[in-house]
Amino acid sequence: MNKQTYFISINQGSRIEIFTEPTDPALIQYEVEVDGEEVEDFLNLIRRFREKDVEPEQIFVRPFNEPAADRDKQELKYDTRELFEMIYRYGTEKTRRELEELQRQNTRA
Image (cartoon, rainbow, N blue to C red; front, side, top):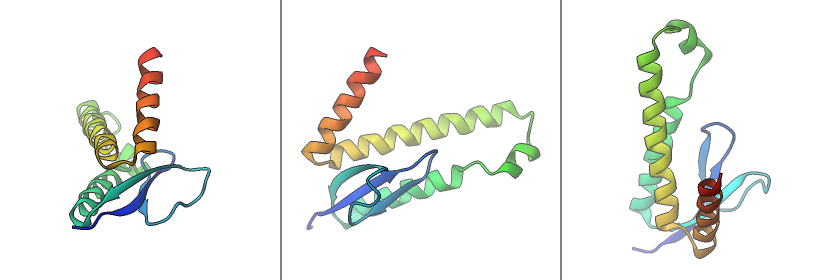
């Protein structure tokens, strides 16, 4: 299948979007090359992030349910790791270099 270039945009919080062209240069954007099935994989993962967005009413519904909050944090951590692994796997050389540098910085911190 033919691969096409897409841009994975990561905003503040867990707002993640996929575009066919670069967008706002102030946003973090990673360039990937994927086929139709791989685009669907990204879209499914993005949907999972959107489902986990914390709404204010959720805080009031379960303010003292720490196990549920911990479970949500673990799921978000897993999904975030999966997202960056996918970006690296399908990323352009430039994207891979950026992620490798980010990893080096995090290792030193």
